[in-house]
Image (cartoon, rainbow, N blue to C red; front, side, top):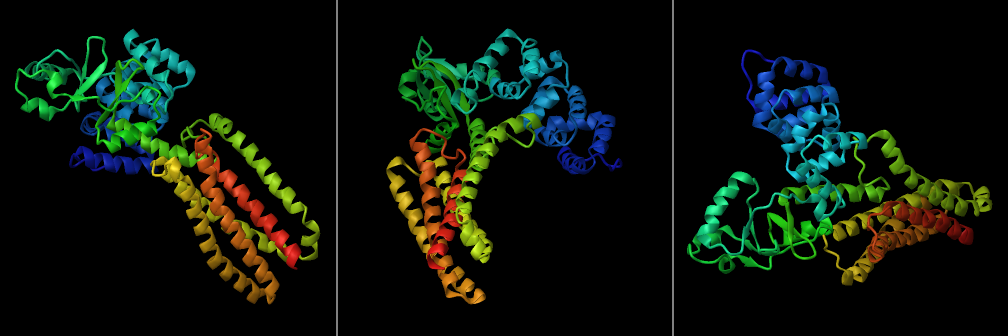
Length: 459
C-alpha cells in the first residue's frame, strides 16, 4: 500500500477489495495495522467495506467488525451476503452479536438470524431484548418469500383524527425515529389502515383540513402471505416506494420497502433459474456442503430415473444399432438440438410467467406460438442437417432420417418447453420446478427414440 498519501475511502476500498481476492492475508494485516483507515472506510461506504470482508476469512472479518461501533458494523453486515454475514456473526460473542442485531431494522435482522445455524440462532436471540426477539421471531414465522418475511415493522403512522397542520408537526417527530418516511400511513383507533398520506397534498393542504380530506383512500395493500412476486408487481405497477402489509382485519402490520422488493426480485430470478436446473432454490455458492448435498440429491436421483428411462428406450433398438453402428454417432445430434430448442422455449415462458406477461387466458396463444417457432426452425434446421448428412455419408436415406427426426424433435421441444411450465402453474406448482430436467428428458426420448424408430422404418 502507498503510505505517502492517505487514499480516499472509495479509492482505498477498491484497492483493498481487488487485493483481497488475490492475497486476503495481506489485506487483513494491512487493516489490522491501519484501524483509522478501516474505520473511515466503514463509515464512508458500508457497501465497499462489505465487499472487502466477503473476501476475507470468517475470523479475520469478525476481528475487523469488533473494531467498529455497533451501528457501523451492523450497516456492513446488512450489505453482505446473508450466509457470509451469518458466518461472521457466529465468530463473535453473543453479547456483541446481540448489539449488532439490535442496531439493524427487524427485516434485515430476521434475514441474518434466519441464515444462522440453529444453535447460534438461539444463542443470539436469547441475548437480544425481548422486544427485538419477538419482532424477529414474528417475521421468521412467515415464509421467506412472502410479504410477511420481507416486511419491516418500523412504520410511520398517524391517527385519522389529526388535521394537516398537526400531521406535519407529528411527521417532524417521526423523522427522528424512523428512517423510511416515503409514506405515512393513516390508521383508525383499532390500527386499521384507512389511507396513505401524499406529502405533496399534505404540504399544500390548509392547516385545518382533516387527514381524511387529503389522504389517499383505499391504498394498495397486501397480506403477510402474499408472494413476493405479487408484491414486486404491485410496486412496479403503481410506482410505490413501499407496500403496506395488513392482517385479515386490515390492521397495519408493517411495510415492504422498495429495497426489499428489488432484493426479492433478484432472489426470485436466481431461485427460478436454480430450480429450473434442478438445484435448490435457496442454495448459494456459500451454502454449507452438507446442506447442498441434501438439497441436490433428490433431484439427482430423480434425474437418474429419467435418464434410465431414456436408456431403456434406446436399448429396445439395440438390434438396429448393431446392424448400423453409424446410427449411434448421429443420435446425439438430434437429441442435442432438441434439448437446446426446448431450453430456449422454457426460458422465454418462465420469464414471461415471472414478469406476469403471460396471463392464464394467453396460455394457448403462447403454446401455439412456440409450436410455430419449433416447426419453422425445424424446417430450416432439419433441411440443413439432412443435406449435410446425405452429402457427407453419400446416403440420401440417412439424410431423410435426420430431416424427419430433427423436425419432429424441435416441434416436441417447442411444445414441452411452453406447455410444461404453464401446466405446473395451472396445478399450483412453481413453473420453474425442475422444468429443465423434464424438458431435457422429453427431447432426449424424442431425439433418441424417434430417430431410431424412423431409422428402423426407412433404412
